[in-house]
Image (cartoon, rainbow, N blue to C red):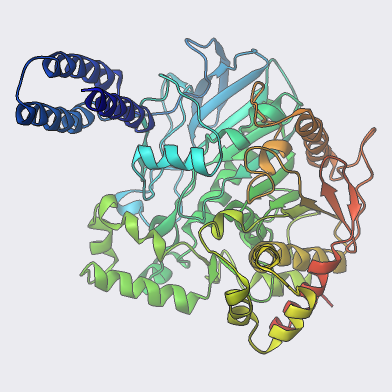
Length: 584
């Protein structure tokens, strides 16, 4: 009897955990409590053992039904985490009137879900973004628009990712839903300081996600933190995966471009900023374009795009660029893009683009795995960005950029490296230059092998492209400020994307995952970013001097300062020789 009660107690609690992690509606909790109460009562009755076993099996089966009956609904995400938030004054933009909401402290106004282009659906799928329709009356900008169409996990998988990857999870009754996802997603959000403002600097942020996932409301790059420091922040959704990067010969003839629809969306959003940001108090002549990971790759591509000329002045690139001689990810030639597009058309048994456009979004969304690469289409990008940078024909006048100490963390999480496979892993990348790399990284035990491989992997895919950018910009006389983020904390530490919450002044007020040293660093890093957005130089009173030099990087840690990254620099020179890279 005791064992049965313990077992049933464990099952009962485990099912409650599943309901929470899966974001099931409150109905599921109530049904589970009611059914479990009845089952526990029955199990105390004088039934035969096999009858009690049937009751337990029926109980577990009932749970599966309860999960389905209370499956989390699809909802738009609120712009602020405030019940019945106060509404802002009406703002008039080119296409109509908008009304946003105030944040909790009422020092920031948020305008969410603003259309910057027509829905890219039907005949507009795989076309350059069109102008949005004007609207009558006042549009309520109090919820974020759906995230761009992308493959999605079960809610419980996302919750486990938060726990395992981010060590960050909050039990709440406010999030028992699934965020909306749609092919109709070309919307942006604006955060501004409360009240009437004029000629404020503007930061436009492009989110990451390997160009196949991501959304605009993620708290690590919320615009609220910088708006508190008198910067207007805009972030935007753009087409992802197959919707943003599918390439086809007929489309090339139709529009003069193909495969770069995501970049065209980003350019369209920048044009919207030029036309409308003054209505929010922003200065359209003082726009900084920023991005992280795939967003940063997009920024570096837009710096090389003739179509983006004049739409921004400065660039912030975090943990990715496409400027190295051999771009390590998120990039391919037009021939490769067209061949992949042709194979995709055959996979879906379509004869032409018209038939592909008739497929539902759900039928093709999984094709994000093969279609998430920027390409050289001859219009958005006339040539490989490396060549454009070599010619000094880029759009930015100053750059703040860098990468993290442990960029590889989430990408090799389940990839065990030991002395037995260490050399083999290096050889898979460096071929006949392996011995040179082993001299720079001479591992003598399993721990060193794992640590060195993590650094090498991160350098290949993230750190080295930033070193390439630094040297190309320096050769062109562009002021550059490069960083290495190495601060540890109880959340992401210096893994890929770990720096964002510091730069964007978004460490949660009551989070126990960050200590006072993190909050001091957040103040420093966000001040650097604000200074850069305002005038193109991150330095300011009370901050350690951030030098414009290709020989050192600003190391962000408990104590921040300029540092030579000597070991990685030796690896970079090997990569230079392998790829034929030169900044001269």
